[in-house]
Image (cartoon, rainbow, N blue to C red; front, side, top):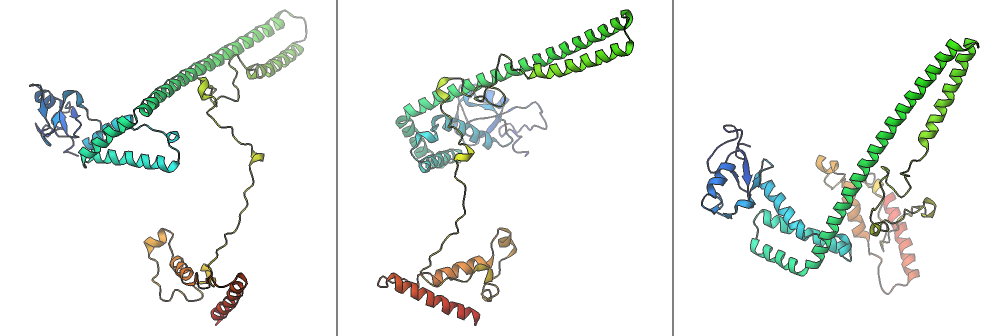
Length: 344
């Protein structure tokens, strides 16, 4: 931890100088801000640790305690900016996964300086061969970012509108209660009717007003939320070209019900005893028992024993000269013999 917080050139530590700012370059080695200024005082400089030629504009403030992490983050951003293909650019999922694995291999080689010459040649060849696709995906990404910003702005506007509606409804409710209270006081002061009947009529009017307010709040405003919007009320796909990109959700009644079908194993030989009965038949006498680590992973000695029996018994009845009927008779006979052996 102390090595990460120490400038390798002037040996200043973060403890002695809390205001020290470490900066990291493409090589992954850090220097303090003062040493960077002194290094480029003559216009050029090299890393004091790896002697790699450096540029002043490539230095950036170190964000992580380990400068190697800053190096990997910078390389990953630079590589993914060029290698920006998507799954729809490949005919199969397998090719897309191979592409992702190739990208991670390139990043790994650059981070740990493994064959940098061939790796950079591979990157240059990729840029030349996929220039059009890279530019198209960049434009698509920028367009999606713009749409996302518009969605966020629309959501903020809708939240502000909802807040204003709630505030206005609350003020209107207070105003109605104040008017009803003044009306009640006026009737009690100037009316000749019975006070109990006046209070009862006031209670009925207040109850009727309370029933009407939820109905008014439930009525849709000018911004009607349709089923084609998110739960927050934002329209799905502000631009027309993305509205048809979502597949319709299949209805529940259109989906076929799942039915379990037991697997059928054709061993072409006598069937092995069930895995549950291997212990009772004393098959584990000469087998090493599973240790604690193996059992924690779900492994038992019965698995290897059952697999060994399947491989030993499988294919014993196979013969190209036998007809189907002969093979069935041989299977039935051998099964009976196996049962007799197990009983013995």
